[in-house]
Length: 266
Image (cartoon, rainbow, N blue to C red):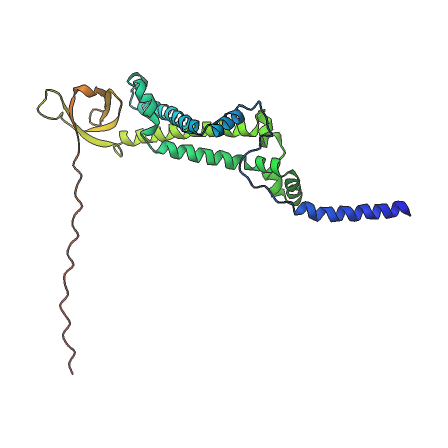
């Protein structure tokens, strides 16, 4: 009889603990769990940046410069120009600041990587909650799959390291595709800034209109659509670089005034 009473009490206690487990608040944080792994290089770097916030600006500046050099290579490759042969050391530092699209690529890459890693982050932060969700519906079982092919365990990397590598790969691919599409638009005549060039010692501009591809501290890069060729012109040899006149918008036609209607007959 005593064992029966103990079993009833245990069952009652188990039932009383189940609602308490369901009432545990869910941690929806997007930040991945590191579990204090001191051997994770990404975690060490993140803690260092938090201790020295000024290093965040320097690290971001260097990263954007590297991204700008990477995309510049693909952009000028379309015009058969080896851009690295024309750049000075100072150009390496400002390569990522010439186009604000690189900042957008950085933000989108970080957001995408965090969203893709969110299921694994939720699993590690709320293991009991995720286990109950997986038991309810097959959709939750797919989202929080325990297959080694659907989580970071297959790669042998910690979630934080895998997320950062995903960010880097996404940004590299996105920047390269952006540069290639931009170059294709200029080659097809749908992009670029049309300019007229006058060299030192000349009294008139060169015949034809060129497209301005970009510049460095020592060269100006031009694309001549008529000849289908690109060239790097030293800045010291250019007397004037003039953009084409912007056409004025036509003035709206005046609205004719309507004559007042005659008074109605009485």
